[in-house]
Length: 352
Image (cartoon, rainbow, N blue to C red; front, side, top):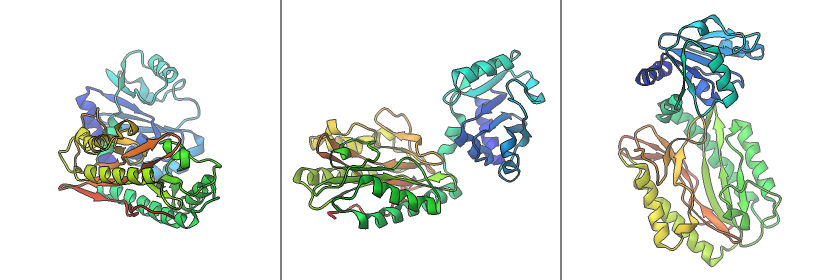
């Protein structure tokens, strides 16, 4: 934790900040290990403080590392601790995670300093995964693979999307947590990239998309597979083959130095050539870590370049309104020479 805080100070120096308020839960967890719901950090170039309330005073004794700890009786904005009286020249706040009301409160509290909305510096640090982080992500994916392959045994006409989703999430909670709201979408629902799940019952010929992820010790997995209930309709069979080839082409680009837009283009150009370009409307993928959406973004408009330690999804899809859709998603770690695929579930077309 101390090394992470020191790396953050390096970014702070680059932004000419002599202090930074960190309150986004994922960032706080990354920097000091705290997993509760109410926590705030003040990081300066020499010191670090962590603040919470009575509910977490026992929890922080074992979780919080690398910081001085303060349990506050009252709100720290209205009753600030002594270190807040320092004459900060430039005190950063996370502009993507602070409400306007909270920012106004902070601004009143620091009349002698300049409160500076700051980009998410901690998120930038989180992008490069340490070996222990990569292993936790791999472990979460192993849980996800097992849950997916187990639930396939339950797929048959008449089963509700909801029942399949609940079975998956039950397995996740036996070994960790649910990383995000599961998507189990069949038939016309599979044409909605973020459909969630419903009481719809499976029918013969349905495309059935699972987009699921587990969280183990704070780190997420993310995987999508599309299977078919009985024999796949001819057009959806062709769409499946196109998406599978598009993903294969994108995966071949994953290595240090590849631009995010080039990876996206590898899949997008092929899908466009096959006549379905307008049916692939989202980006190719995204980073995964403590949160299921992190840096880098594999998108046409991205200026980022892949580097060792990035964990990203590769998930092209084609969606046909009123008919169904196909998405195939793997999660990979960028290595020094290429990538390591954490996802083990098969990708051959399945007709169950």
